[in-house]
Image (cartoon, rainbow, N blue to C red):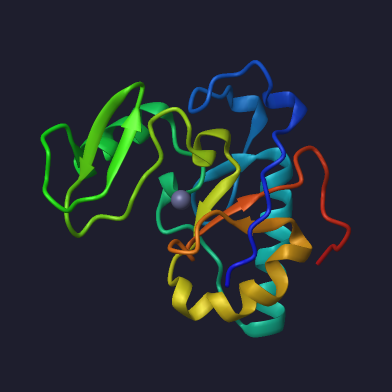
Length: 167
Ligand SMILES: [Zn+2]
């Protein structure tokens, strides 16, 4: 079972719009992508620890698999979901409208509601390889999972705080 803890929204994000964050609250992470400042710092610490402890290279699947602007959230949503009924497909209701998930696609949050839009989530590349180490160590760095069905999707849950551990 993946450990699931609720995300604490950082104070600096209150009043801002999901997926429309100003540059000053986002920091770049290597090799690509951006995260909210505390999440970015913790990610770099965790990345260093993974490399030292397990020779594991942690990275997002792509640049937009960390902070994901609203335009990208919307575009990806409409690649995966359609407004015409698909028998047997899973559904999602966004702004009162029902959408059907096209077969073979992973579910996605409604545009404007994803933790990626707060710069607090990362979709980890090659998660099958990384998962054993992440399960053991990611909680100490303030990262947790959202859904049992999405082992690649981790979110930073400590809000404005940094984890007590430092790499
Ligand atoms: Zn994700």
